[in-house]
Structures are given as structure tokens and as C-alpha cells.
Image (cartoon, rainbow, N blue to C red):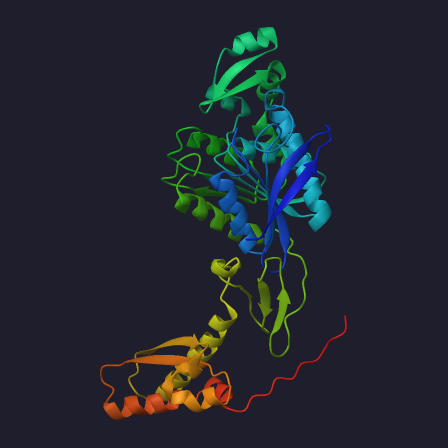
Length: 407
């Protein structure tokens, strides 16, 4: 996905570092992702979920909390209340750009933070909330801190280890964490909620999901990430969670109005990637792109993929329609099509080379499945393949008329 680097100013005077995953096609909504305790916006869950949302047309912002990753500020003097404040600043910035009705997604302590922030933000700013491995009690995270917490309470600050990394934290950090009653906040929340949790989570047990789900009001949903670890280190686990969140969120997000579907033909509009373009037919929409090897985002088929597909699909449809009309026992057709740009180099096209023309070709290979079809029937089906409408268009005299529209 195309990624923008963002700087998000906070009310405390420092700047947060963000990465905004943009759809290659149209933007139909926006989402904000909050990473896990001491992680960064580069965590696997943050990247996978954000990019899955972007593929669905939802611009997704992931950012580093205060004092983590590339964000300014001191992590050890922040604490949970500052995380929530960071989320509010980031959510407001996202709404200012894309409009109200965004999705909040939080992983681990980030999940607790989005639940807290969602209840503080003005009504209408948030459309729905999804959490992954979130604790029901925020003080639970203190169990993952190795150090003399009593000495920090007494002296004001001290050194600790979190996840094998050294940090200096202060008394306020501990106090802010201990004072949170997340279950009450969830009970007061009036937003659609999806709770994703693994029953094999060894860091935040499944009982936390039960408490959150029990406290929440409908509409609420639960997704079991069976077999996944807390950090979703396995790509397949992160992608599974991402796909479900993407599909679930579309039910509740007010997707933005965009240009309409055409009554006839297709309409193509450039998107946010280098090559990504959105295609609308009268009843369908999809994205076309170029592969990574030429600088694209590989978010959809290439223009020549679509050309090949036009011939191949029309061929298969025409053959099947003819066989059905005749009552023949055709089990199916497989059509392979490839495009060759410099076909004039072939010996049998020497005249075209001499004339200085550039000749291209489409190679089509057809497999007919049907054990009871005789040779005559198979030959007739191959003959019919050449009569498909797209084949006739490509081999006929085709004029392309271009006009400039206003606006």
C-alpha cells in the first residue's frame, strides 16, 4: 500500500510519528491503530491490520506512542493517561482530514487505550472499536515490568526492564496505570465493539476478553484467535485478524460517498499509489495496478492482465453457452492467455518488420474438459472460440475516440 509519513502534534507540545497506509484506489473511510505496550507502529499486527484496511479502501494510521519508536517525549513519564491523550490527538487529526466516523483498533495495552479514548472523544467521531488481546484491567501490565516498583513509588523514578529492554519510569507512570477502571469505561461505551483474543494467549489470558465482553453492550462481537500468541508473531494469525476486522468494520463505518457507478462502459480514476487506479463498472468496482518490480503496489491486476482476461473470459463464456445450447456434455473450459509485445521478430511476420510496423500478439491455449465429447464436437467448440465478441473486436478494425470532459 502507499504509505505517507505523518507528524502529529500533541497538546503537550511534542510530536508523534505516524505512518498512514493509503488505499491505492478511493478512500471510503479511516481507521487508527494503537500498538501494544512498549511496541511501535512497526509491530507485525500494526502493519498487517493497517494494510488490510487500506486494501478495503480505509486509510489507516498507525503511530508511535509518546517516547516510543520515532515519537518525541519520555515514555517513562507518560503512562496510560498519556497514551489515551495521544490517541485522542491522533484521532482528531485523522477526523480533520477524512471526516468523522473513524474506526479505532488497539492491540494489547493499545486495545485498552482505544476503549478508554473512545468514551472521551466527542460523539460521532468514532464509528466502532476493535481490540486484539486487550487486558480488562490496565494494572495487569505492571506484572510485565521487572524492577523495584516500591522503590520507584518512594524515590519518584527508577530503572526497570520491560520485554527485555531497559526503561526509566516515574511514580506518575505507575499511578496512572493503577487508577484505571477499564471495565466500567467499557460498560459506559455506546459503540459497536469487536473483541479479538487468543485462548492460548500466555501474556493476557482469555479471561480478560470474557470480562470485557460481559461488560460491553450490544452490538458486540468476539473473535477467537485460536493458536495465536499475544503479539501475533505468525503472519497468518495477524492476517486472519486483519481480514476479519476489515469485514466487520464495514458494517458500522459510514463509508464516504464517491463518484457513482456508470450506466454504461467503465469509469477509471487514479488513486493514491504510483499506478493504482480504481475501476467502476455499472455493478462492480476493483483496483488495477502494476507489480512491485516496476514500482507499483501490486494491489490489483495490471492493464494487460485485464486485456488477457477479457479475451479469456469471453472465450470461455461463449464456448459454454454454445455447448449448453447444443446439450453437449461439456464439463468445463480452461483458457490461458498471454501477451507478447514484440511479435514482429517472428520469421512469419517479416513483411511487417520490413514495413517498420510493430506487431503484438495474444497467445490463447484452450483446454476442453468433457470425457464424452467426440472429436467433431471439440473441433466445433474451438471454432466457436474464435467467434467470441471480444475476439472479434480485437481482430476487427477498432477505432478509439478520445474526448476531454470538463470538470
